[in-house]
Image 1 (cartoon, rainbow, N blue to C red):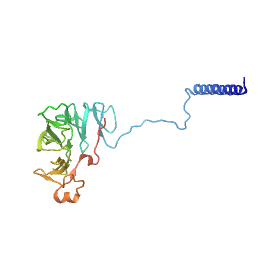
Image 2: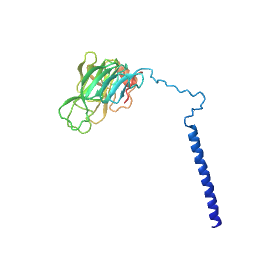
Image 3: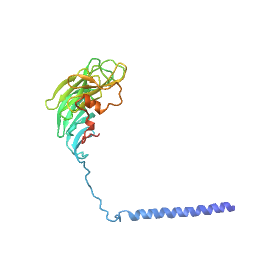
Image 4: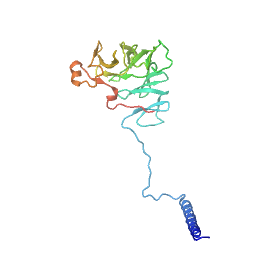
Length: 257
């Protein structure tokens, strides 16, 4: 055997000895510590509940619940696959789209089944059939009414967002009645005023967007089409209220899936 071969053989033998010693030490340590209590100082784990400051709506699978924590044992308010939802400004009601229906649910039970709804993205479209949209609904500031858009399927290119057949309706939670507010309503994005006014955008013939305001009697254009900025002074000079949107309210709740 050459000198290099002898050296390699010696190194390999030493490495094997160290590996064997390491394995034996690891096995000894493992079996010696099984069943031995932890020596961490003051080791005393506790179980505590994480709760929110206020109660909120949330969904677990197909169950809608209301609690101050994610609790599977909390009462189930409604069952169904939730598609769209919007919590009221007072955090006491939630408008939910489930099983083809728009439903208003309170903190203890279902309050109202508003109406059947459908999607503007449905394919193929049942041309000529009227329907209420399953999105773009809004709560009034006082949480007593829900606004929704009625539409009609027609042959169109694209998603039918700006619909010349659109109508804006108002649903009163207490009476359970639907009332036509504005027709035609060629918009899908809109904001409610502090009082009864409605701000919305409609497309012009040139393809721009024009911000408009409905005061309950007539519609007025605000600014120029595609205006990127409208000063509050101009709104205050011509209108008696400012836009309101549920997402701007402090303390609004949210649902999670």
